[in-house]
Image 1 (tube, rainbow, N blue to C red):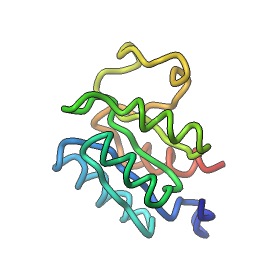
Image 2: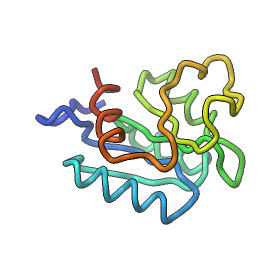
Image 3: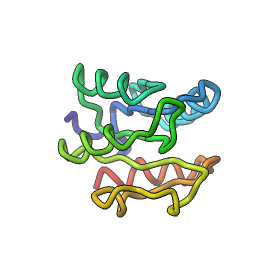
Length: 124
């Protein structure tokens, strides 16, 4: 894992989001904060491949994907001790697996200040 940059932000963020418009919005905002690299995946399988290719410093995971959910990605990140947050419109009642119940969540849509704070806080 690369160290955070001088602004306290991760250098490499993985976004797992199946809606291209939402993924682009997150990518634009995260790059606007000063993050150097943002990668996106529209499925859990693609996200796992990207993680295998190069582990991110941080990940933003949509809970419900068209092709299932992002729980396998979250579990891989958790095992690798890579910080991540879930982003969802469903809230905590979505039924997270027990090992993921304490994962921080951002509402969808989320404010830019909340997104930036999540990136900074999870690296501590």
